[in-house]
Image (tube, rainbow, N blue to C red):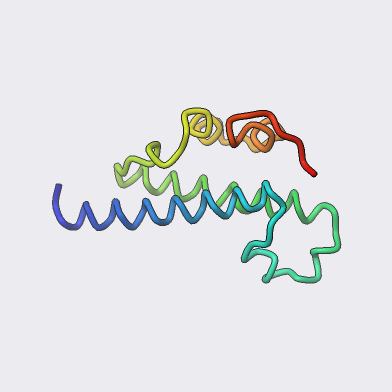
Length: 106
């Protein structure tokens, strides 16, 4: 593997981890950078779903770019998470099962 390919793989591993962490923070209803962009929206109940969709799209976009560059993205995710990403649909099942076990929001 060339040095450029190694650097690119390392770069994308970091970007995948950032996107994954951002998405997981939205699942857990924690603060994200998106909250800082729209502080006036924090009071709106639909904001939590909206920021989840934004984080999900960021994750899907990062995965798509990794695939186009032939970079293995799967190793950053559990098998079930890979299947969710491959289906591309964000629904309650993804939110409930992302960590590998059924969970409910507080």
